[in-house]
Image (tube, rainbow, N blue to C red):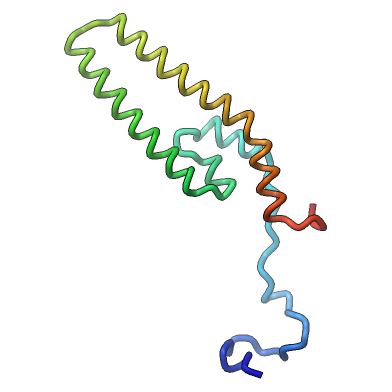
Length: 127
């Protein structure tokens, strides 16, 4: 019986069932609608990725947004100096088109991601 020596905060016998207050909390099922709202409202921050526990790609979303915003501003400031207004309009249109394309692609991929998260993290009996 090394349990009491190695884990002194556990005050029950080794063969007894684990008390409820020692069990980890049950995870709730993630919802596609919540992930989509996060995508629409906070897409630049990658909130939908953090919601699904994809922290690495969430940080990549933040980094890519900051980098693209900086590049966009540098080009925009350079364009103001040259004052080519047609190029500024084309740049705006291109940037918005790219962002909307990414949002649509993520929108379509979210149900699969949510389903995969639920499958991996929630037992079948709880679904």
